Length: 536
Image 1: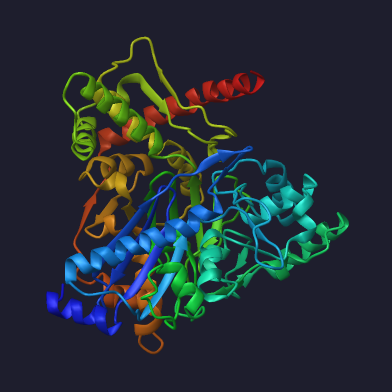
Image 2: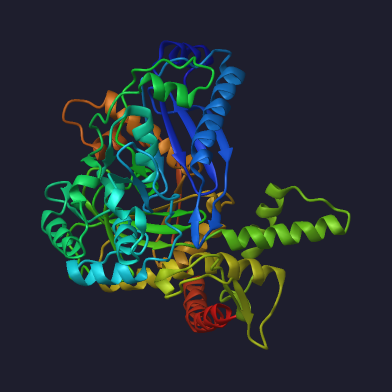
């Protein structure tokens, strides 16, 4: 870390880069110095809503949240360094991937944002998978737009462009309709040889759409595709004012391509080279493994084929549910503590309960959690109903409740990765990042057991995707001639970063296998609950 006076001088001279990421529960901004060290942070909490059958965020929440997050960053800069943030060397925006943002010719949203959490596109996803002989997930943008066509939604004929949440914010900041190849790969399949949308698949989709009387071609709606290191536009005066309501931020800095949270996770864990991978765990959880060869079957329903920020093929297992149910249990236990006159600190409660999980039985003691707050495609669930099941002889202890809840957070991910192992995909390094890894060794050891692979957590794991996008912004303006993203990360970012690696413990692996078998069986009760509640 540079000396305080050097950091203040870097900020005042406009030598720092900014990354902003829209997560599912928090918008975060990270300012980094030229060495990629974080020097200030801003945050703003927000939450999705379930409206008219869709998971969404209101558009005004996007812009209010962006401004509030940047204001929080400015306040942190002033408090830490005693200077005002007025200029940037570069910046970038990232956000939750996938979903549906359809704009008219004036750039206005035609329907409220439909997020990755939606599971309303099953018919479209199945049709497109068959048409393209390529697994098209329900949450991908192309599934959403095709479902809107199938449902005869009124707005379809007026669509002028489609984008993601990161793409929308980038558009407002720069006027450029463009995306990183990584984020674009969650809209429509990418051909890694061209680093662009797959031409044959575009033609097949457009032929199908024309048969339904659709008045546009998909390629005319999709954002321009860029790779990491390419300039994706410049901060306009309007964009600067959107960020900084006080009007102090100068326009003109370059922006790196707008990225998805999967891409920033790969950057934040140095997992962009073949045979590297990472697990990002938050409200959702997904694993990403960079492939050294194509999969033999590109229609495997548990595996999504996306790309790194430079366009290399990635096998992704994406699950909609991870920490939400754990959070609910911890809140319930804290409420009980308050009832007994002992108001607990939330952070300490999480730490102690996570540590207690390691004292539980290796298989959870017969306690099985199904943490499906929303639908879970990997497990065949359309609408989530969180359940806690236990055998009549189960040991229902607090340790087993916490252990089974953490193991269940990785349950769908483990089921999907069984398929990946059958494909013979090799992994040299697997990194974990996200808040669930904050308590040392707990979630890390259980994830190693779930995936039957060593898991590394870096000292930077808590920095998250906003930091990853700030690194991408720095790469845009500071890379050496011909320096690849992987080379830049190795040389300039992760050379001296500490880390902890845990090998899977044999007893934990055996216990997790038993838990996963119960988890799969209990999923039949989840499916029954879904049918019963739908009938009700």
